[in-house]
Amino acid sequence: MRKWAMTFIVAVLMTITAACGNNSSSSANDGGAASDTTAEANEAELEGTLNFYTSQPDEDAAKLVEGFQAKYPKVKVETFRSGTEEVISKIKAEQLAGDIQADVLLVADAVTFESLKEEDLLLSYESPEAEGISKDLVDPDRTYYGTKVMATALVVNTENVNKMPSSWDVLTSAESKGKVIMPSPLYSGAAAYNLGVLTRHDDFGWDFYEKISSNEVTVTKGNGDVLKSVAGGEKDYGMVVDFVVARAKSEGSPVELVYPQEGVPVITEPIGIMKDSQNEAAAKAFVDFVLSEEGQKLAAELGYTPIREGVEAPEGLKTIDELKVISADINELFQSREDDKRQFEQTVGQ
Image: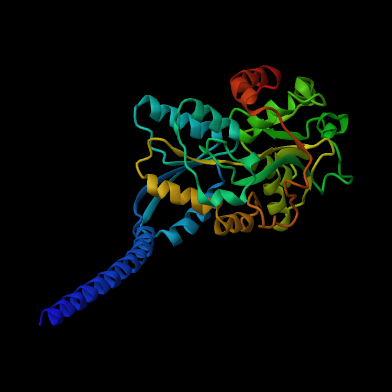
């Protein structure tokens, strides 16, 4: 009897142990499924308002937001768009008021982000989508990421000009006097970056801008105005970001894009998250979307050269590997930007 009882107890214990083991396994599996489900739920339930500040053209910014909201339909994106310098002025004004409204910022160049980084206004975020982007085009502290490759080159009106130039010198030549237009570095972040880079390059310097000024250059607000003037035949030549020329040409405008033989300045239109973002989860999702293969293909569809490896550039544009790039130290450009703009006003005026 005692032997039978002992056998029964052992059997019960074995059954309980097996059941516990099964329950543990089931819990682990359920937990894994729950984690996956939770991750999907978090993505689906991401919501709230996201304030997006950008210098992108209105239509491009709208399409980017549309692509993001197709994935995150419960997030309401409010967009403020202007030239880089005016976007930053708005952020500075909000900072003085003690309430920065921007969650995500996407503007022309890294120098602009360096100024915000120095003021500790940016959130450091390790985006999982950054693996496909060269480390040279990403802030080492992950406060901002390049999103595309945009070179500044020449736009030429093909109805007014028979022989295409090959050098930046055309902007200072007698034949182009009064026929040149460029964006203002006081408004355009790309133009401000170009100013800093070119004036620190031996082949250009401030002498280049003095000659352009003497050649009766017209200075306008942004790159869009430059393209409009050249495409409309008001001017023959312009300094402009490459993608707007390739896009206009594909739509039938009488313009040609020329990458000068001396080389070109390149900006990456970075994206970053403001440190005091009121919707950090949505802001991180927005950055991830822009850097993802899906976001980069959207950029290419809009006519930009993607920054992510493996996504092809639109027809008519060169990739970063194909360009002869003129550059300068980012920190030096940041430290001297305001001085450069003041000297530009004195040299070229508005």
